[in-house]
Length: 326
Length: 312
Image 1 (cartoon, one colour):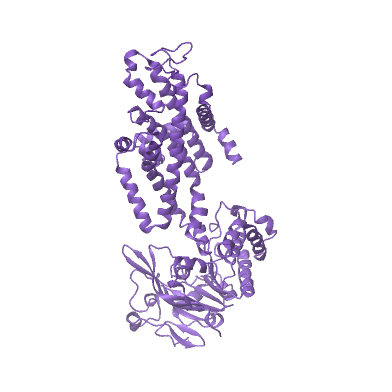
Image 2: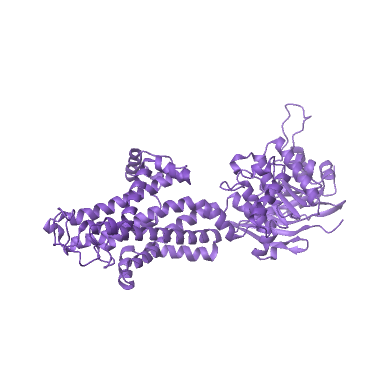
C-alpha cells in the first residue's frame, strides 16, 4: 500500500477546566489512505469528535488544548502550521462535515451563496464564476434543479438536502481527506443511506480518504474499509471491517457489537448493555481504562496500562488479555 | 427593505416615530426657507423680550432674536449631533465589540478593560471637563460623546458575538477555510446588524438629550443656536422671573417631541427587525415595568441596552 494521506500520531487533546485537564483525546494514532474509509466508532464522550476537531484544529480554545502529537497530511504537520496557512488547508486539503445540517448553514444567506463562498475562499475566480461552479457542485451532490435551489435559503430545504449542501461546501476545493462527523445522525434512515451513498460515490470520484465518525455499526458495516474503536480517549481496537465485526478481540468491542439489536433476537429478550459507565476523564483509571467495566479483568488489568499492540493482519488491540479470542 | 419599511409604517409606534423624525429632519433641512428670521444674523433683531404676537409668533429673547426662528434652526444642531454621534458610536462599538468577542485573548482584554474604565468614569463631569479643554465647538461634542459612548455598544455586541462564534454555521465556515476577517464581516456583523441599527437610533435619541443637557449647563457651542442653549439663555435671563414661558416651553417641547419620535422609531424598528420580541400593548408594557419596579418581575431582565443611556 502507498503512503497514507492522513497520519495522526499520538494526538493528545485536553479540555482545561477548573477541576483539572480532561483527557479527551489521549494518544490517538491512526492513518487514512487515499480512497479508503476509516470509521472511528465509540460511545458519546469517548473523544471521537474531539479527535476530528483536533485534526482540523477547530477545537474551541480555550478550554480545548492540543497538548502533543502530530497530524501529518501528506507529510506536512498541520499542528505546526500558522493559522493563515491552516486556513488554506481547511477546506482545501482536508474538509469536514458536521452532525447538524440544520444549524450548520447560515440562515440569512442562500445556499448557493454559501457554496460559492467556500469556492471563493480557495480559488481566485470572479463571483459570477463561483456562482456557476456552486450550481455545478449542487448538481453533483444530487440536488434537483440546482440553479433554482441555489437561490433557496436553508429553511426552505430538508435536512437531507442541507447535508448535501454541506457536502458540496466541503468538496468545493477537492480535498484529499474528508472528515465526516456523524453525518447522518440527524437524518432519517432512508435519507441516511442516500447520503452515505453520495459520500462513497464522491470518495471514489475524487479518490479521497474519508474519516467517518459514527456510533452506528450498521453504517460501519455498510461503508467502512477499516474500523478503529475508541474508548475513553484511546483507540482500543483497530482492524479491517469484516474481521473486526466478525471476531472482535477487545472486550469493549465485543460489548459494543453485542449491544446492537438484531432482527432475529426473540421478542422479549432484554437488550444487551455494558455494565457501568464511561470513566471520568478528569481522573482516568490507572490501569486499563475499561477494566472497571470489563467482565474479564484481572488484577494486572487494574494496575498496568495496556499498549495498542499489533496482532497481525493489520489489527491492533489494547488489551492485556489480547490473545485470547473466544 | 421595502417589506421592513411597510411593516414599520403599519406599526402604530413606528408610524408615529417615522412622522415625527421625518418632520424634524425636513424642518432642519429647510430651516433657512421656513424660519421668519435668521438667528445667526445680528442685523435681524427685533425688540427684546417680546411676548408672542404678530411678527414674532413665539416672541423674542433677551437679545431680540425671534424664538420661532431659533427653534427651527435649533433642530439642525440637535439632529447633527444626535445622528452623527449615533452613527459613530455604533460603528466604533460594533468594530471593537466584534474584534473583542471573536478574537478574544489580548485584544479582548484590552478592549473590555477600556470599557470598564469608561463605565466607571462619571460621564457628565468628564464631559464638562473635556468640553472646557477641547473647546466647545459642536463637533467636539460629537467626539466626546463617541469616546464615552462606544463602550456600551461594544459590550453588548461582544456578548452576542461570544454566542455567535460557537454556532455551527460559524464553525462550518471555518472548516472550509474562511479567515477570521471574512467570518467577522460576513457572518458575525450581518447577524448583529439588526441590533446595531436599533441601538444606533436609540443612542441618537440619548445623545440629543445629553447634548441639550450640556448646552443647558452652558458648555455647548456658544456660537451655535441649539435647544439646550435656548434653555440655558432662558435660565440665565431669569425667564421665570419675568414669566417669559415662551422662552422655556418651546425648546423643552421640541427636545421632548424629537427624542420621543426617535425612541418610538427605535423601539418599533426593534420589534420589526426581531420577530422574537412579542408585540406588547402600551398597557401591558407599563404593567410589566411597574411590576419590575415593585420587585416582582425581577426575572424579566434589565432595561434595554443603549449606548445613549450610559452617557445621558
